Length: 152
Image (cartoon, one colour):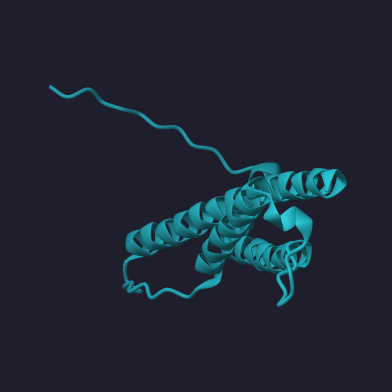
């Protein structure tokens, strides 16, 4: 014979209601926040690429002495690759995607929302990681270029 389970309930307090509403508001604002962060990252990545190309000045004449260093070239290539990876990942956050959901299925809507949020969050994490690696490599590129220019 199955056991009888008894549940007791009580009214939600105003503090609990406010907290629940706050969490609901945060969940709905999350995609917008992720996209705003991705747009900021896109701006930072393009600015960083501009700085990098300024440092690695490639022109028609003879290359600056520091660009003849294999270390500076290797670090520069790594920096460009990492920042471009971060840029592409950030673009994946703001890129629209098609999700088909039945308006009569709240469970399906919830699952789709969670998938959307997860995709954007993972892409932004990859973007920030790529950008961070790019910043570190840029710092190393600048240091190597300064050392190389000082020894020439």
